[in-house]
Length: 362
Image (cartoon, rainbow, N blue to C red; front, side):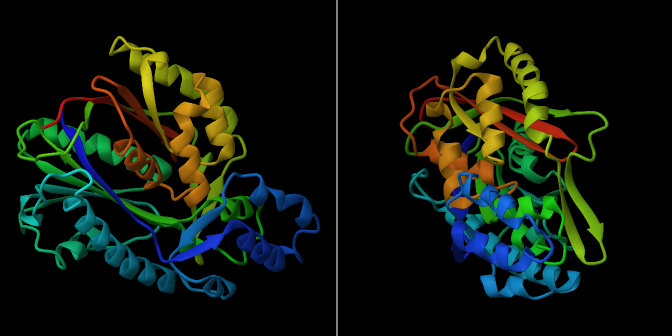
C-alpha cells in the first residue's frame, strides 16, 4: 500500500479579495449584461473570500493573444513548479530528512490550463538535479479531477515498483485563460470561481526508504468513472483567442444523481460505508458542488471543513485544489486506522476516488 508522505502548495503572488474582482467584472461587463447587478451576487454568495492569481488585475484589462498567454503559462508554471517540488522534497512538517532529487523515479505532471512540448516537468528537470532517467508522465485534460487522478496513477506506479518514490505535480494557471471579450454566463461564473495554484505530492512505495514524522495515509484503492455522453458538462472550447470555459449549470444536480452510487459501490468493494469515512478530502469545485457532496453523501460540515476553508481562501484552482485540502488533512490530528476518501470530478464528465487509511509511522 503506497503512502502519501509529503504535500506542498505554492501560492501565486497576486492575492485578490473577491469584492475587488466583482468590481472589476461589473466595470468590464456592465454594457453587455443589462442585468449585471442581478448576476453579480454569484461573487458574494460563492463562499470565496480571496484568490491568488499569477498576474496583477491590471493585466486582465487588456487583450492577450493565445501565444502570449501560453508563453506566460510555460514560464510561470516552470517557475512555480520548481518552488513546489523543492518544498515537497524537504518539507520538515512531514519528513524526518529531505529526499534528494536523484531519488525520484517518476514525475506525474498534471495540468489543463496551458500547453507545452516539451512538458513543464522536462523544463523543471533542467533546473533541478533530477536523474536523467526519471520517468515523465504528463496528464492533460482532466481539469478538476486531475489532482486525484494523478495520485491514483502514482499509486499504481508504486504498486508496480515498490521501491519507487514518485512526485505528482499539479499546476493550473486558470486566470491566464480569462477571455475579456467573452460575454457568456459561463465566462462570468468561471470568473467568479477560478484561480491559480500549484501543489506537489510525494508518494512512496512499500519498500521505499522514506522516514516520516508521524502517521501518513496509505492508498488502499482507487477508481475512475466516466459518465457516458456528458462531454458538454465541463471543459474547454478551443477558439482562435484561446480556451473558453464550458461550465454547465447542471453540475450540482448531476452530482446529486450520480455521485452517491459511485461512492457507495466503491466503498462496498472494501466492505466499508460512508459513515466509516472520518476524513473527506473533497475537491471544492464551488459552494453548490460542496452542498451537493454533503446532501448526496450525508456528510456533516465537520467532515468538509477543510474543503470549505480552501474554497474560501483560494477559490477553485482546478486540479491542485483537492491537494490543498489533502495538505490540511496531513497536518490534522488523526488516529491510526482512520479512513479518508479523496474525491474529485472533472471533464468527461468523470469522477476519481481514492481510499486512504492512516497507518503507523514509517
